Image (cartoon, rainbow, N blue to C red):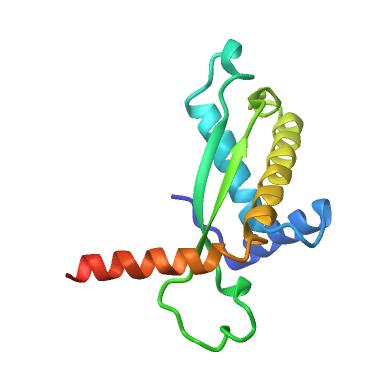
Length: 143
């Protein structure tokens, strides 16, 4: 397990924001790195790179997306779901020994991730749907 010190995390966050802009986060980097790690550990055959997407449904902390009139309430679980789909895997299947190629692939993957997050988190139904699902599951598990 990789453990980063707060100072190291701050340097990574600063690097992401200075390279791509203030609207990018360490979460975008983590998602992009997950894609590259998956492709490195379980490579897709070259002939299938253009045919097979990687689709990642993932929970996102939804608290910062709450409307102002709901922000004062305390929710035990407040997750929304963003689905990130990486098409055209050729652009991410790089030589992992080439640091420049890996950095470029990370940037491309971060751009896809941010675009997906922005799309899904702009949907007004997403957070209430996530809360309803979590409440349903809690009630089901409690019964």
